[in-house]
Length: 386
Image (tube, rainbow, N blue to C red; front, side, top):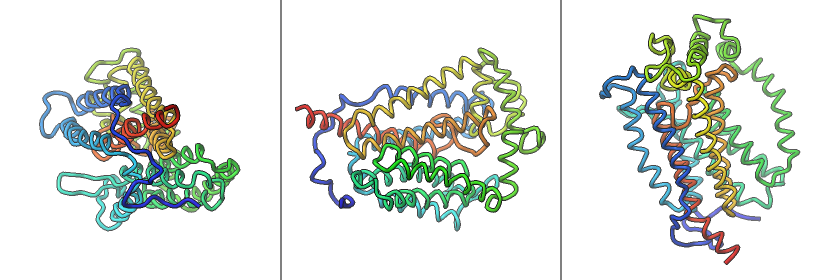
């Protein structure tokens, strides 16, 4: 039976070598920078445009970006196999941060999701996403020939269920769904038996019915129902959904320019720098802008998934699959809730929405995949063909 990696050294079976910058994925970085730039323009506009002062929301995002660049560079330079080595420390630390919200968390909008350190707000659930990807990747990679055993399937679920349960209590249904989608994606490329996954999906149906009837609070059920029928509460929970759809529709083909649509100009569209930034951006750039945004997001997902296709290392493949799943699910749900096909859950649009924790986690994830490319790909090539 395979064992976990030593917490102090790389496995002897893992190849060693110098960093090969020829394998650095510049296309991935370009896509990321385009999304960052798009987000900065949208946040600047959503914050009223004008001069960038200390109190302008785009100033905060610029600071978050400046702080995040060293995170991106550091994760790129760090051999990702050392991340694997300390995965359980990273995972355990993320659980402690999530648990600390019960004691020291700050409640905003009815959810306790933030730890406040002076001017800095940290959202532990964002950090936990990447921690779960790393921990689950190590678990599956170390047991790749034994993942067809049921107890390993169950253990993989427990690894994800613990942070997901802590996030659910905040409450944060959206991020709970991110964890579930990451687990499903990573398990699909493992050697687990398909019958286990099918059985879990079938079991999820009665579980969801039970949760709807006995676990969800009344306001949670109302919010989910109103997300698909906002006319039920035009002046309440459905108000911003309606305004978002009007903003998207009024953008037309080319949009209204940098000022955005009337919903933004008259301050009718709320939380337009975070949850509903897509609706504001479509008021700015219209249908053409939406197509351009979808294209860049699609290219970014293609480049992240290419890491899984090009490396021979199971851990690197799993990291790439997990990060791709995280970005895809967040983008799909965020855009979906803006257009009215997904419930409003507060999931940010990667690299576009205002927020430090989300941005830093996304930058760390990109850096980690770049580390896989430059520290392993060329070694795998030499091993297989040299």
